Image (cartoon, rainbow, N blue to C red; front, side, top):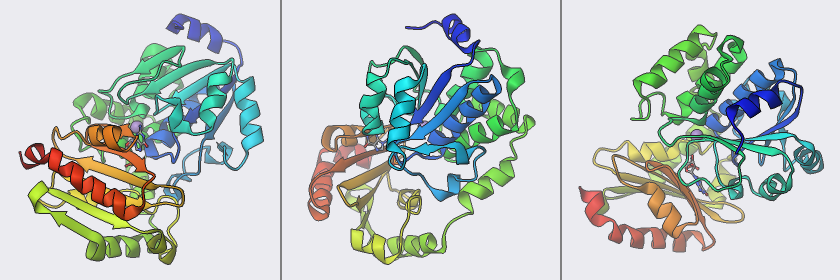
Amino acid sequence: MLSITEIKELLATPQKIVITTHHKPDGDAMGSSLGLYAYLIQLGHHVTVITPTDYPYFLHWLPNNSDVIIYTEKTAEAAELVANAALIFCLDFNTLSRINELGELVRASGAYKLMIDHHLEPEDFDDYRHWSINACAAAQLVYEFIVNELNDGELMNKDIATCLYTGIMTDSGSFRFPSATSAVYRIAANLIDAGAEHWKIHQLVYDNATENRLRFLGHCISNKLEILREYNTAIITVTRQELNDYKIITGDTEGIVNYALSINGIRLAAFIIERTDKVKLSLRSTGDFPANEICKKYFNGGGHRNAAGGASVKDLSSTVQEFKEILKEYKTQLLQ
Ligand code: 5GP
Ligand code: MN
């Protein structure tokens, strides 16, 4: 493992650095990555953010977004950057399978691997770890890494602050999950002092939907929401045909699961969606109900206790059927 002193020494001279994050990156994945990017370029490093896949349009306004390389679109270039990097920062994920094909390229690279993450059960592939499951977002950990670990608080600027605020805001449910502690609010205040325009960030992320998304949301709520009161569970199921009918693009389905969870008495919400290659599940829960346990045990996934995901190779209706069967096992907890 690298010590922080060794990292400071490495960062004292210009390095080739890659920052990568999980596939289908969300606000925290992109916010933490571009926040760290805006910090590292100030130090004179050659830095590239590489995402395994594309990501929602409501994140494309983030500072330096145009510098991001999407692996599926520029595979050879991305592979070369990973192979030649001296340092690879792995943000907002902790198992290499979360970055798809890029995972094995990162593993094979001779670069030092630095993990900054807040998910359970990290895989042992890294040379440095700034990791805590108590952090509300990877962006919070990036803030701490820059300000507390590297003592570079004076390099905080508007771009870094804007990106890190976005990560913290999106992963903390706009500062309303239990993970949004007073310490998180203090960090947010510091980021606002450093130039993050909080009102604008909220608007750019949350009031920036396509018309199709809103109409699709209406369809999901009116026609596709199934409430199982006997399990305090709500399910929204979506077919590939519906995604095509509503011309759904990356990002349009984000957050729809939360509407199912907003119904009174509902402890578990599932958004089950038929993608081209698999059926993807997004689970959200309240209190101490372990949504991640279901994803890990049955759907080859994982995540946080209250926000988790997984996938199934079965067809849509069999997956929904399986999910309903699983609820029986959790009935007592769901009714608590
Ligand atoms: P979402 O429902 O927004 O896709 O994902 C919610 C959270 O669940 C993510 O932040 C991530 O931590 C976790 N997650 C989603 N899908 C997967 C998956 O396939 N595998 C693992 N390990 N975690 C996932
Ligand atoms: Mn995160």
